Length: 321
Image (cartoon, rainbow, N blue to C red):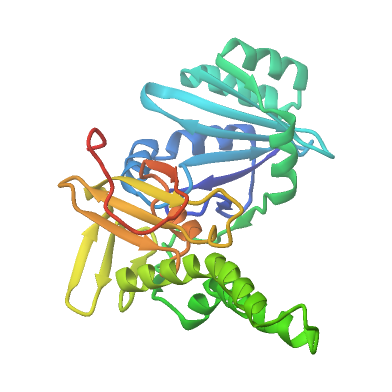
């Protein structure tokens, strides 16, 4: 019998692996021992950006999957996945290389019942909730990388006109509401000038907040450019007055300010990066999307707050540093 063997390194994306390699049980154990867990785990701890955890993935003849992660002192985290329509996964923690080898042998022979029984002996055994397995079934897209060379991609972010216009869409619609109604009312005497003015005032009340927030975000981030490099903890902030290089490890927390209501201005968000010296950098989603920040600062602690009117301003960070 044989196994499909592949590896993950911290330079990889979460769904990225080395090329499939067909190996015997004995070869799989040799490669498992040769994997430099200490070095790769050390690299992983230093990368702030969202990335893959150092791991080994095995697949047997029944298309079952065993993911292996190693912690300190030969303590292993195992994720066993089996099933066809909706593959179900189980997690267990075992200590010692001998215990791991015993589990891999059961896995190679596709002895599912015995394997699950053995996993239950490990600490913190748990079965993943069905809904999470179902979601993963449809969104997981396993990619294969054919070399260990780190891909050095550069990312830059600046405010674009299209982003500004998109944020102002609701404001424009509200400002145009009264003129459009007037146009379609035609000669209807019931829609006189006073009615027009009242409709204009009321609709403008809903349109003005978006304009204020857009102005506030432009005032804060207008003329800024952010430069990031894949898997690099440093990034560059260029403004009209200066150019600074920051290290992500110098930041203690990121605070995302959002609006969870159904207000027309609920699409405005910004993230505050707090340095260990208390300095704050505010990044609006006009400049960079919140989803991008989540990836670039994935390992930095995050706090989320909801505001009714999300103007950019410094945060009270007492107790957070």
